[in-house]
Image 1: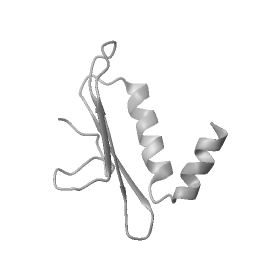
Image 2: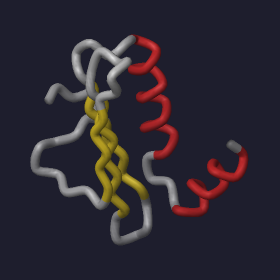
Image 3: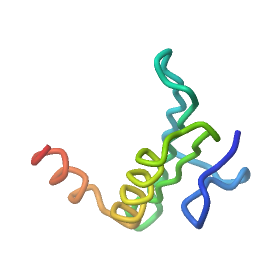
Image 4: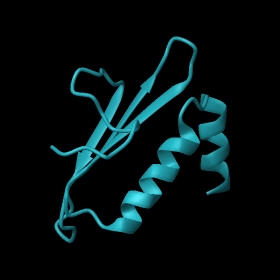
Length: 83
């Protein structure tokens, strides 16, 4: 599966605590979300995006990965509370 460009893409040898790969019937391509929490409790987030994923989705993915990289559980709960 193709991956996103830059350092937020998933390397094939990385291990993750959670992964969710989906392709909805209405969508043109597949998106994968991968999460690993390291020994310090900080998140490592990676994404895979197929070649047909639209530009807006790619941009939002980059913002999400950059904004949550290294986040703790507290930051995730705060994001959940305000959404």
